[in-house]
Length: 298
Length: 238
Ligand SMILES: Nc1ncnc2c1ncn2[C@@H]1O[C@H](COP(=O)(O)OP(=O)(O)OP(=O)(O)O)[C@@H](O)[C@H]1O
Ligand SMILES: [Mg+2]
Image (tube, rainbow over all chains, first blue to last red; front, side, top):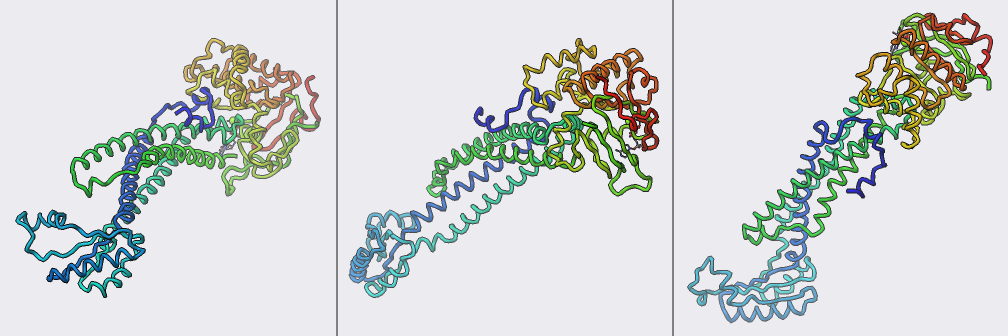
């Protein structure tokens, strides 16, 4: 807090008295607090989506599954062996592991029940790790000759709609944050304009006593910045409280997919930066508004 | 230095696109000598306040040249104007005290604007308040003062920065004759210290109360020269 205050040109107590009203006068701080609250939620949403997108792009996109569907068990095993051999020779493949019988049984249990899958002609599944996500078409071509019944499933293709949705939501979150920044600017311009109106008489007198535009602007800049900082901290506090509650409830769902939604460790820094950025934005906007208005005086 | 203020062919017309009602001030040509004492008289509406507003840089003339301290203030860059304003003390016709500041803080304002340190400010402010007889009211708000007391605060604020020019618009309009005399005495004392004084008034009784004061007379926006103050450079007090 001390450090932050040091960002503002120091103003003596007497100067502060020049604009009589204290903290949190008028509706501006509360409007800013609400906007900061919403911005915090939008930013947190955007960050969580970015993290999800990274996970999809990283872990999941670099995996593929080879499936060999052949009723004749001998032919199936022959093709499986040949497929594994081809895959393990390919430099684009980092790992190729056949999904074992026990694991298959577990996977299928919800659909087939526990009464055994021994007599069913189950397909062979091979879990493939890839060095490059775009290696799948070449692998499919290579497998066609040795294992005609092998099909390769590209996770990336399967996840593409999800990726697209996440991408859109991310842009939306960013757009909301940017709109909020713009709206914050407008609110500050209005607040500065109304403060200028309220203090017209004082400003005229200061001006005629030889105060420079910057001297006058500083009075407003500091007051509006402090209002914005206070509002920002309220908005951030409320936003973080809501996020913590959401996090608890998401964890309570126990779902792996939803449970994996998380914020990267540095996102706390981004969220805390929001009120600080708002404060600086408010100070700069107030200064610009006041200097521009004073420029119209002789 | 010949003159501290010089007006050449100055005209002022309110309203940007020039109304049909002509100029409020026309063809002002005069020079004020440094250290002299001037009264500016004229009927109500003759343009006294308008002329003073040009002088204390609240208003730009529509035409003509205004020189202060030998510099043309009409064409000077805007960012240099505060420097000129700090050399001019003004008593506004309507006082313009800041309503939520105490008498003390109102009087201290010019020094604070000029960046005087708090510790160097108390003595001159107290001395000034004593001089205008308001030492005991330093914590009062302007609204709790009488009209005459407010006027004295305005005067204290105008002179505390030791301006080179003091411009006072009807500074005795709200006080009894005795207080008017005391205030004129204060201006006279300031004048003896070298400040050029311009006092606008329509109280012709004041004119005789300051020895060697010059009188400028405004009639419908034009200057006449009953005492020859403009034609003959006045003797400066010292
Ligand atoms: N801001 C303004 N806009 C338009 N007209 C103005 C403005 N200020 C003054 N006037 C006009 O200019 C004329 C001169 O006004 P000014 O205030 O200079 O007179 P004055 O001599 O000071 O009068 P008084 O003795 O009553 O104070 C008046 O007709 C007035 O209506
Ligand atoms: Mg007047």
